Figure 1 (cartoon, one colour):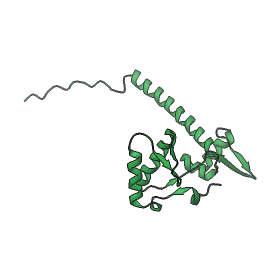
Figure 2 (figure 1 turned 180 degrees about the horizontal axis):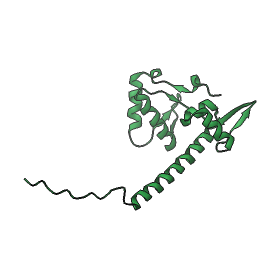
Figure 3 (figure 1 turned 30 degrees about the vertical axis):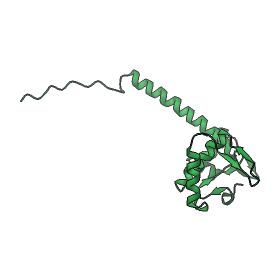
Length: 155
């Protein structure tokens, strides 16, 4: 189970001057070099650079960061909260097989990667439906309806 205490980084844990220096380092294009205590230098790979830059930016805005591994198991309530739905609706989706889950005793658990997968499918389904609706509205001429010309006032 995820321990928020161990996976949470609060901006107050970093002195303001050090955070400001990190913002500057990650704002410049290119890469950041990491130097260990022996002087050995390693360049951060692009994927890590982008993630660290985002973390530093959020922390400079005084926002805390919580890291969640993809295989982290969520309770049904935590999973429902993440997806922005009721716990009962989530349970219905689990029972229908729309979201993978496993049991721990009699309790359902949902892996974070399965929540991400469902969220991606849900968003794609919504996008397709909205595109279809938009095309139908446009084809019916209702998106930019023609307006009748109003004669100017006779003065």
